[in-house]
Amino acid sequence: MKKFLKYLGLGLLSTFLTATPGLGAERISFFYPPFGEFSLSVDSLEKFAKEGKIDQDLGFYASRATPEQLAQLRELLQQRFNVTPTLVSQVTYSPIGERVLQRLGNLLLTESHKNGFYALRGALIIAAADKEGLTIVNLLRRFPSNTIRLNYTEGLKIVGDLSELLKTRDKVVTYLQKEAIAQATNANVNFSQQPDLRMPGKFTWEKKTLELNDASRNRRLPVDLYLPQATPEQGPPFPLIVISHGIASDRYAFAYLAEHLASYGFAVAALEHPGSNAERIQQYFAGLASPPNATEFINRPLDIKFLLDELQRREKFDPTLQGKLNFQQIGAIGQSFGGYTVLSLAGAKINFPELRRDCNPANSSLNLSLILQCQATDLLPKNYDLNDDRIKAIIAINPIDSSILSQSGISQIQVPVMLVAGSQDIFAPAVPEQIRPFTWLKNPNKYLALIENATHFTTIADSPANPGVLPVPVGLLGPDRTAAYSYLKALSVAFLETHLLNRSEYRSYLQPSYAQFLSQAPLNLSLLNSLSAEQLTQAINQPIRESAKPSQPQLIPNSR
Image (tube, rainbow, N blue to C red):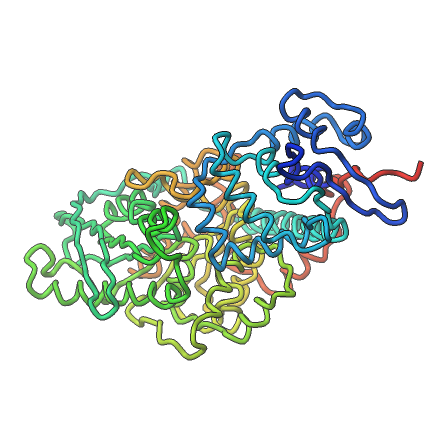
């Protein structure tokens, strides 16, 4: 994100600029008071993208950029996005896609100073259909306006808002890391001499696949059930853990975690939510299904309720399940949309007044998770009964919750909670979506695991069934994920053994010192079990060191 900030000023001039005369934009124009109107030929940008040459027109701006910024700009202009015109059409005609384009259209105006919404949508679809594919260069070839007018005021506001967002994130992350280190200083446990929770447990297990069908809601629910096999020391019934995946994912995303928990004697049910799983998103991208709609915010928790009901029913007559599952000890784990799902099951209620305030069109928040959360405004505002008292502990990874559940909803949760955040998550940013909500939790048995340099996708394993459903650029996937998998394995075992099975010998693993023991660069791990709203405010308001300040774009024409 910091690299993005460095060349955003010049990137605003080029992100949607390059065209062939007669087919699209020929110049980009912007007004910079008090110096007046400035413009740049798109031919200059095209030549730079293809040949790396900077002519006199581009040179005026390039002289104000560093070599690194120019290299990043050229890489950006050459980037090809592997998307089909059907996919682009489906997304840009969806409510979420239209919200994004409307915001972007405020930045990139047509020659007549109108919002560029329709021009961008048409250009995106046509460029994706072209043999050269969707590139920034090809996109601007298709932009139906002789001149693209950059709303420079809006651009500067975005740069400023992004800068403040990054400063806040960096200050909070630094503060939390220092707090975790301070709390770990007095630890007296030698974890190198303790059982390594990253390693598999002593149970073997078998996997059983179920096809459940909730006829009342027309929901087919594939479920993989991981069943431990009895040992001489321990037999059934086994505590049950349910795993809820994120949007465009499936039941394989956390198979590594399900297998690990099964090796410690937990039965694990990993299900798929048919309205927002990988299969549904693939069908949507292919034009064969409608986009996920607001009812998913209700259906997902109901899916898990139905799953638990069905397992309890089948346990009475299915010989492979009889006596195997302990329905008095149930935990739930969810990531992203699945994080919202398990939070709502734990007692957090939807806050419709907060949603309406935060989803006002005038709100220009850079929190991308609001795009999804605001879909819930299409629901009938009423008190939905999504809580399930059978669930006694939850782990929410990169959850989205700040507006749809908000403080009033999160504070209603009474069961133990672990929140997992990634410092580089731009889709569910750590500060508004996990760190601040952590301060809202009232139950003292709460934990915040922060993984430095982790993104929204760091804890997710590649799915053998649906690889690469979402066209996520490699740069957004983050560093090698192996260390993060080991963190989640160890912390999940410790949390569930402690708070689901009341095994006090595992509580020492839930201390900041254990996170320090596990931590591996660049995905450094911090763990806290306390943080007040006052401490968070203190972290946000603390002065930032000069050396830590993000670089500001230096691409504005000077007064000479």
